[in-house]
Length: 290
Image 1 (tube, rainbow, N blue to C red):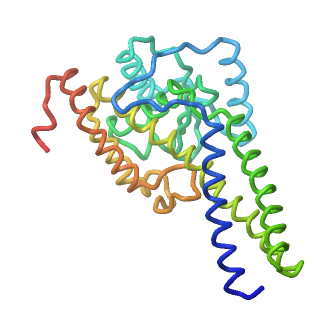
Image 2 (cartoon, rainbow, N blue to C red):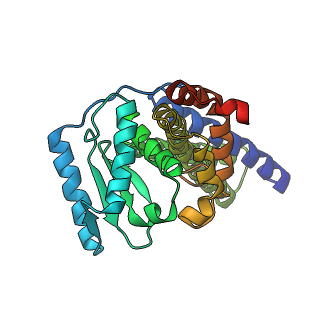
């Protein structure tokens, strides 16, 4: 088998890899996306799950010699924002437990177990604008409302990708042997097909994760606008993401989060609806000031 034949076969194999990986992952993802402008209904977490989540958060903080704050100006600031956001959803402020972690310079926030919100003091100290902090809080609430991120879905997708890779790797090896490739070349083509599946499949899995982040951005935008926070502040968060979170936000293919520029574009696309909600809540037409 000459080099051109091998390369032609490899190109066709990798195209098939991409198609099979994406189709198989799409097939095992049955979750429906939330239309832009909609906010899912609130479901209160069970007390048992909340207790388990608290134990996990406390254990993690203790292992890192971090403190959980239950009072003070930083706690009160975040609590007041959360109360205002939850009030806009028609639910009490204590619907989802809030944990403020004194994590030194850690700038982060997360929704844990689809029922609790964790905010690190590093983030609170870096963001002085309550509108911007509300954008992040709304994003975390959105993750909870949309029931994002069950680990079992990721494991299912990884398993499916591995299965596709194994099958395709064998098929390419056999096919190469049939058309006259020597055994070493046949095995090499099969191995490359398998590895190609891993790369494309990983990108596809992370794309599903990124789609959840985008969905949380959209829903969080509507929540903050409905609560009377300026939704344009959500764009400011990502324009200043390097200063707030540190690191680079430019490369998104093999990342669980979209790049900062991608998030800005998506938020601006959803902004008209958010501005309508803000106007309905405050009477202020920000759209006319654009």
